[in-house]
Image (cartoon, rainbow, N blue to C red; front, top):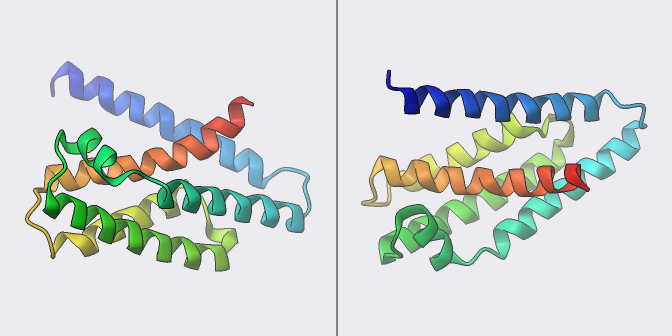
Length: 144
């Protein structure tokens, strides 16, 4: 395995560890269940707003370097599916964490995969863009 892949995996592990640690502290906090519920639902709403306001062509160029019609259609399908999944997670707020969000993104990308000509590599980049939205919401609040 080359050094670049090792460094990338290490960095990803550090990031995931940081997020999981932060969420563990959040859920083990002395806040009441009602307070935690409100915080989680607020985060879900912030994620939905972030996803809803995304500039499609800008996201496609960021992921793939170009904005194609097929890419635009795929991104819109993933976006729609992910918003539905976030609504479901809102109903089961206790299960909402980084892992459940990433799983929802992966499922939305997988559902769109059958209707596109885009390559798996491009679809993985699209998944990464949606995961960045999680990081924006949760890491932005942590630094304030």
